[in-house]
Amino acid sequence: MSEKIIIFDTTLRDGEQSPGASLNVYEKLEIARQLAKLKVDVIEAGFPVSSPAQFEAVKRIADESEVIIAGLSRAKEIDIKTAFDALRNAKHPRIHTFSSTSDYHILGKFGDSKYGATLEEKRKTVLKMSYDAVAYAKTYCDDIEFSAEDAGRTDIGYLADIIETAIEAGATTVNIPDTTGYTFPSEYGAKIAELKRRVKNINKAIISVHCHNDLGLAVANSIAAIQNGARQVECTINGIGERAGNASMEEIAMALKVRKDICDFYTGLNHSEIYNTSRMVSGFTGIVVQPNKAIVGENAFAHESGIHQDGMLKNRETYEIMTPETVGVNKTKIVLGRHSGRHGLKSRLIELGYHPSEDELGKAYEAFLEIADKKKEVFDDDLRVLMGDEIYKEEELYELKYMHVNAGTGTIPTATVQIHSGDKIVQESSPGDGPVDAVFNAIERALGIKPTVESYNVRSVTSGRQALGEAIVRIREGEKSFNGRGTSTDIIEASAKAYLQAINHYLVFNEIKLEVFEKEEMVK
Image 1 (cartoon, rainbow, N blue to C red):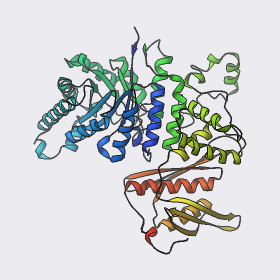
Image 2 (cartoon, rainbow, N blue to C red):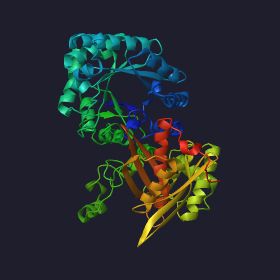
Image 3 (cartoon, rainbow, N blue to C red):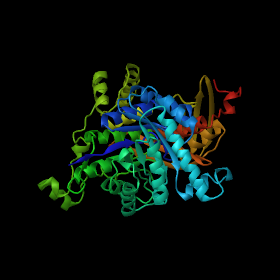
Image 4 (spheres, rainbow, N blue to C red):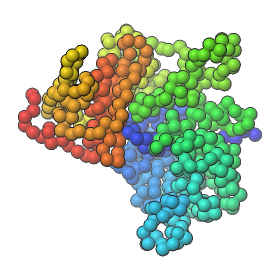
């Protein structure tokens, strides 16, 4: 008989740890609503103790969601209490706590002699910390998940001991993460099967898996784990996450759906919402989905080869194992124009997964009319950009108000920018190697900072000469990187917006206020 696999979505927690990805509270709330529409079973909304913004996001999501909402915590009382404070109003709260279990992690994180002189003593300390953390979390709510960090590289004997201890303390879900993406499907599946044999109280908890994609095996490892006894899979939309990312939810879901003949399990997902969810997450995070990405990439259902096209025309099953409509890719593109009206816009936004308030709809309609003035047809992807670019962004410290660029053959490119911060304005000009470089230089001179540009990408959002251009800029300061995203029918303007947004993210993260705006020689 077919068994259900619980889908635990960690896009808003682990996914947001992708280099440069940053979501504000409103964007997280919108994604959580779409995940609920997708019908995931658990949403890991964040790590509440890590920052006030994380706490607020988890609280807002918990306050309105019907599904299980999880908050991450270390094996510390302050973390656990803070997590529950954020989850207090959730209909179905889950505290997710974790401890390091591999020798690599124990020796790296618990090297101090106060944790024990030998590895064996340190292991006993971690074992007790894990028991105490789960037992303490259990005093707040019944649904407790325990994760053995770096379980993929943890000795099976010690791993069995710590899982058994966590269940004894009250854990209802035990997660066996391949934190470093190190294992192969055969050994990972065998580890899950061995835990089922060794842990005497394993029938009192659900086995979960959380796989990283460092070797490109996250989905394969997740499937192998399911075949060997795991019944919850932790994954992210588009496979985003730290380093090479996490197991991709859409790939796991469709693999189970398409290959029921050899893997007889199912999820409760509404598969027709997969594409909308993918595009929303991409738009808000600024992480572009690669064209050849399975299930949701632009080329996933494209057929260019003449042989393939001929086969498709005769029988779709010749080269397609699933239809685009299954995952919500609508072949008929809805096109709006200037005369579509507020009601038409609102109806389409709701179909795309957005839930604008009347105030947000007003802002969206104004931005929509501005786009419609520049291009005759407004497509779904234009609307997704509009919602991510204009409506849910937080108020930024510094805003581009004016830009003028002079460039051409035989001319030294120069740019002038005017940047506002509240009622204060600063203006600067600068030459550059090209128009984009000149704009970046002018912004740097205006703000008095010069971050390292790690990457710069420009693409068209939709087709045609009037397409919106999207620029994504990643800057790096020390160990941390920050993404900025800007859109416009003018790619120079889009680039300027993206660069300034990345700088804003950096400044807000580090709580820096630039001295240049405290000076009196402002342009009025």
